[in-house]
Amino acid sequence: MSKKTNPALIKWLHKLVKKSRTPWANDSPDALRICWFFDDETKQAIYEYRNDKAGTSGFAITSKLQEQLPEHMNQKYFSKDERALVFGYFFTEISEFINDHVDESDFFNFTGVTKETFFSTQNYESLLLLCEQSIE
Image 1 (tube, rainbow, N blue to C red):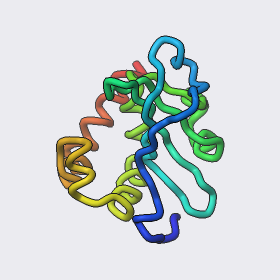
Image 2 (image 1 turned 90 degrees about the vertical axis):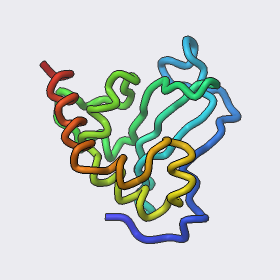
Image 3 (image 1 turned 135 degrees about the vertical axis):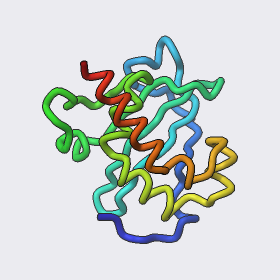
């Protein structure tokens, strides 16, 4: 789905310099945005917003990705508690982006785990279980 580009040209971490317009921005001001999925042709992405203490505030997805979601999930913004839904649904795309564009040491320094651990079958199955629990 995505074209290969020079990983140095894609920034997966963005420090926000303007005030965010996310629904949670007043309660938990966004300081950092993480790009979890990126398509060079369509510029589609999942953005994780974090506050100044690096806590996740929530997620936003671009319109083309929103169209791919089932009707009960069709929304632009997701709370931090809905991480499993977002990551579970787009797990393959996120892992391809990270493996193609993010250096192993940068990923480890940011997440605290290796790419192999983060994108393991066991982790994916855990996300699916969390998805099922959040839908019930």
